[in-house]
Amino acid sequence: MKVSRRVFVKSGGVAMIGMSTIPAFLQRAVAATPMPNKKKLIVLFQRGAADGLNIVVPFGEGNYYRIRPTIAIPQPRQGVESAAVDLDGFFGLHPSLAPLGPLFHNGQLAIVHAAGSPDTTRSHFDAQDFMESGTPGVKSTDDGWLNRTVQSAHEENTSPFRAVAMGPNLPLTLRGPAPAIALADVKQFRVLSESKAIQGGFEALYAQTVDRVLRGTGTETFEAIDMLRKADPARFQPENGAEYPKGRVGQTLQQVSQLIKSDIGMEVSFVDTGGWDNHVNEGGAQGQLANLLRELGQGLAALQQDLGDRMEDIVVVTMSEFGRTAHENGNHGTDHGHANVMFVLGGPVKGGRVYGRWPGLDQSQLYEGRDLAVTTDFRLVLSEVVSRYLGNKDLKRVFPGFEIQSGQFLKLLG
Image 1: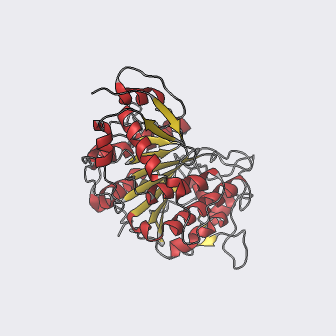
Image 2: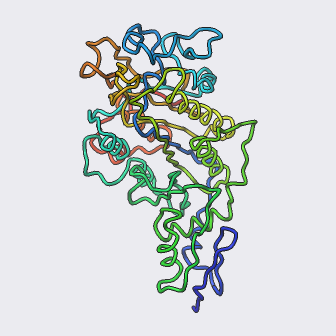
């Protein structure tokens, strides 16, 4: 077959000239029929170590106010906007997360407090790698638990958008043998450069020239270009009166919604958020943390409202590498700690409850006399989602070295 390798960029798509037959890798893209009703998992990572004690406030424990004299969130009080949003008489949401209150009380949001990694490092980089790899304490793991989740549920003719990281780089959690793609912005997607003829055909050409746009391998990259151009996810507008906040987190969550609505076969998505390392002037009801939580709360609530009935097939999990010190520091902030809080949101979630065993904030109950103690391994939460929701029972492969029985699950899912 004689094929011209001349290509050009037009309206953000790819045009091919002189091709007498459809190549095999485009046939595979066509064969990858989207499955709009397939279960989907969205993982949101709060990079920098979020302050779980001020995200979900243990206002029922007096020690909380003793050890946080200037940054504690006031107890719930009718008509006071700066007060915690009461959840169950003991725990409350930071007031900036007020949009999530109705989701909790409607049973759509579950919370796991005192969750975290059994590894006790206070290094951001090590702790993030351990959580993304799913192998705490093991630095040699070079693939991620989310990639292994996809690997273990291998299917023929899957979409190149089966696993997507929303950002410019592929995070560790999605690295591994299973194809995964990093997508920085669906609105600005473009093939960035014209390319002259090279040896090796279109697969080789796109492996070399377009990989920086979609961080997949050569064949998957070109399939994704073609599918994304045809699907045009940016055309989908928020539904049901949803309004996403204008910041990066809100706009990224809107793009996740657009990819879901475009039915291009996305099953797992990873969203990165930063700025959670608040050593100085963290603030209480107002301040740095409050601003971050305001966008997060509005973004997650908008996602739930926008997707409507589609949320019956979607679970969102939030996580952060570790928590903050129980005591505030001398700079009205908090330092690197241990246990944290996780949110689990979606249709099949048994919400309206704060799960996990609360360890207490008395000095004798703190880990190393300074941190909230971990009572729920983060892998236990993820294992339940992977096994009971996604249906992947091969947990020893997804989380090697973690001994777990289904009877130990928190029963977060219905």
